[in-house]
Length: 151
Image 1 (cartoon, one colour):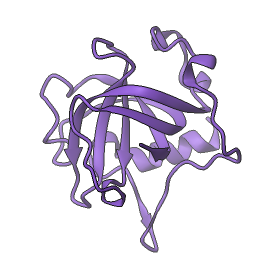
Image 2 (cartoon, rainbow, N blue to C red; image 1 turned 45 degrees about the vertical axis):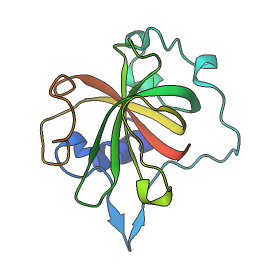
Image 3 (cartoon, helix red, strand yellow; image 1 turned 180 degrees about the vertical axis):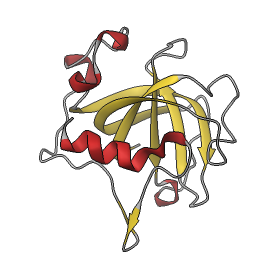
């Protein structure tokens, strides 16, 4: 397993506890050596992500205009979001955003652009941190995204 995936898994507790760990109050996020991330569609077929193994999902990408399907806030007031490439897609992605850095909170139905590293798949578990997600999202298999930036 690649080092970045090990970090993502250790941060994850997906969905049980808080995904982000704090070291001296600095949150850990993805970090690419490049300023420009390729569009995810140049690396993957986003309409059929199930064809890729977790080892294939180790790329820094830009996910432009994806759709927010669910939002929950953990005890650290971080936005935990589930998003898809189209409103009808069944390929779910999960990430944690530092929402207090922006003036506008993310809401269901928003279009979002995320730069970061796609990582391993996880199942969204029922937990206190995920209590605000729709029950229809709990138990779904999702691709974890370690977010570098978003808008």
